[in-house]
Length: 153
Image (cartoon, rainbow, N blue to C red; front, side, top):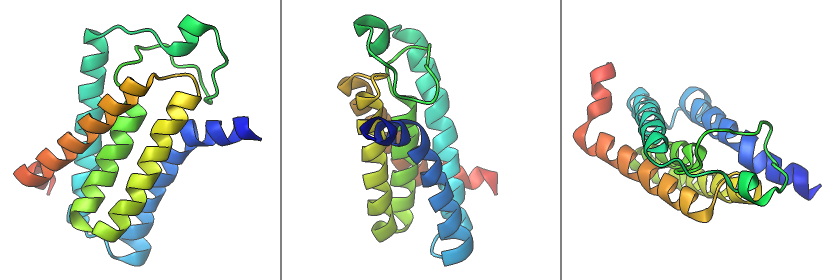
């Protein structure tokens, strides 16, 4: 049962965060089009940034070094640093928080659980997720302050 929980946190919860964004936008109406564009723009930027950083730092994943089980739906083979899942989750949470503080805090808890899940799933070191969280927060904050997402309108 604990293994399924870790797999859920590490691999599935991030998709529920995206579903939450859709629900807030479509059903609840609390998140406007601008907030959704901000979140999606920040997610794409941080995804590209983590891919570039992974190419610079070829750090092997924990399961490749310790021989432990991988508790994710797939076994990632790319570099460990930084955690892309965590970066995306925190970029999404930060973008939402900048537009809707109350719901943003809920998304931050989800992002934190994604980070913990990635560590417990044996696919990231704690520093990978800390760096991913920092990148996600910074990219979403920067795109919000610079209004870069408005280019998509």
